[in-house]
Amino acid sequence: MPILEVKNLTKAFDGNAVLEGVDLSVERGETQVIMGASGCGKTTLIRCLNLLERPTSGQIVFRGEDVLGPQVDVRRLRSDIGFVFQNFALYRHLNVLDNVTLALRKLQRKSRVEAQAMAREELAYFDMAAHEKKFPAQLSGGQKQRVALARTLVMRPQMVILDEPTSALDPLMSQEVALLIRKLQARHITTVCVTHDIAFAERISERIAFMHAGKVVAQGSVAHLANVSTDVNVMRFFASHAS
Ligand SMILES: Nc1ncnc2c1ncn2[C@@H]1O[C@H](COP(=O)(O)OP(=O)(O)OP(=O)(O)O)[C@@H](O)[C@H]1O
Ligand SMILES: [Mg+2]
Image (cartoon, rainbow, N blue to C red; front, side):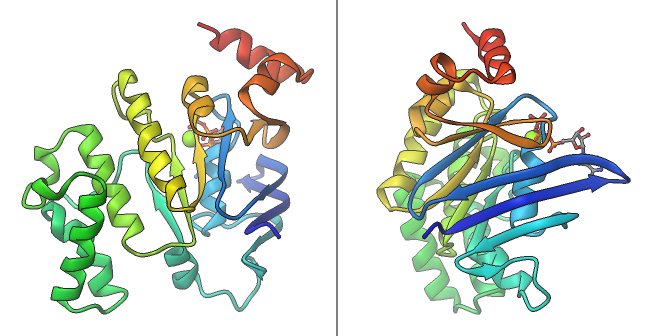
C-alpha cells in the first residue's frame, strides 16, 4: 500500500486554478520526484501535503489517514512529514546545534542532554559534527542544507519533502545534493523531491511525476520521459532543457 495517495486534488487562489486534479501515489521508502516547468504547481502541491496550503477539493491519504478530514492533527502531521524549504529556513540567531535541537526540545519535550545527543548523531551523519558552534551566516550553502536535513531527520519523520534542493546552490553542487538524497535512501526514508534539474532527477530516482498546468501528465524515469513519452508538454520541456 502506498504511504501517500493524492486523488483529484485541486487548489485555486482567488478563483485561479493552480492544481487541476492531481493524482499521485508514493510508495513507502521510495524517492518520488516531481518535475515540471516553472509555475505548473509543484510547490503548491507539496505545500498541500502537510497543509501549509489548504486544497480546494480532492483527497490526500497519508498512512491510511484522510489528511483533509476534520479530525486530523495538523501538528502531528507536520512532524510526520518533514519539509526542507528551498532557502533552508535556518534560525539565524541560533548556532547549528541549537537549530537541530530546537524542535526536539519544544515539540518533543526532550531534555537538553537527550536532544543534544540526538542532534550530534544526526549532524555527524551529514558530516557537520565539526560545525556545531557556527551560526548559519558562517556556513556555505551546502553546509546549510546539511543542517536543514539534520534538523528535519532528527524528528524521525515518516516522509521528507524537499523543494528544489539544488536551486539555492551552485550548479556544480547538484551531484553533492544527489549524494545527500542517497543518504536518505540508505535509511529507507520516503522522500518527495521537487526539481526542474533533469540531470539531478536522473541521479536520484526513476520515479518522476511530470506536471503541467496543475496536473501530473506523465510518469516514469528520465529516459522514459525524454525518449518514450508522447506528451507534448514533456517533449517541449526536454527539448528546451536539453544541453
Ligand atoms: N499564495 C498564492 N497566492 C496566489 N497565487 C499563488 C500563490 N502561490 C502560488 N500561486 C500561483 O500558483 C502558480 C503555481 O505556483 P507554484 O509555486 O506552485 O509553481 P512551481 O511549479 O513551484 O514553480 P517554480 O518552478 O517557479 O517554483 C503560479 O502561477 C503562482 O503564481
Ligand atoms: Mg516552486
